[in-house]
Length: 252
Image (cartoon, rainbow, N blue to C red):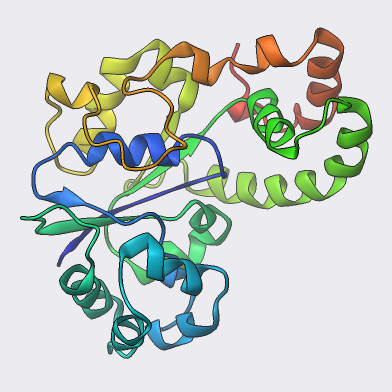
């Protein structure tokens, strides 16, 4: 089977960084995101937006090639056709992984529809909110947060419930962005070992930075703890008053 493993996690928690680390392995590559395993069959994926539409640029395929992938009789053949069609993969790629953050919200179903290892990324709730605030393009945290909080809490709760339900599942390993920054080698050795690729020290220096949302070619603390600079103590306290329920993700 050409699909080797899955990467998921709450959006902006390091899934792309983890992808770039795994992309250092010769013969292993991936497009940006997929999402097919959120549907019961490959055919059902045709109508799942924006994931289906994003596949064209994310994997470098045409609409006709996408339709051919979705006509596959099962997920294994879908990924085999995707590997054959993709123009963004490195030459010599023999195995691919599927990095789709949203799989975390559907993890029960995703695990049932696949038999490969899964890597789940996460980070401190203060860092989660900080990432969203930065992308909002406003300086008024309090006004922004009041309109953001309720919907975000509902979404995070669903993802967190799936995370807790499967954190001890043998096919699953969880990777905290803070652990990746503060205890890099041990964390990388664990996650590489989980997917069946022994870690080599050279993998820690990313020389295949395909996507602009990865800012550094190494794992660094400023990525994980940016919220300590960008958010004042009052804003951090406000976040923790609401998000403290997600205790497994709080880094102290």
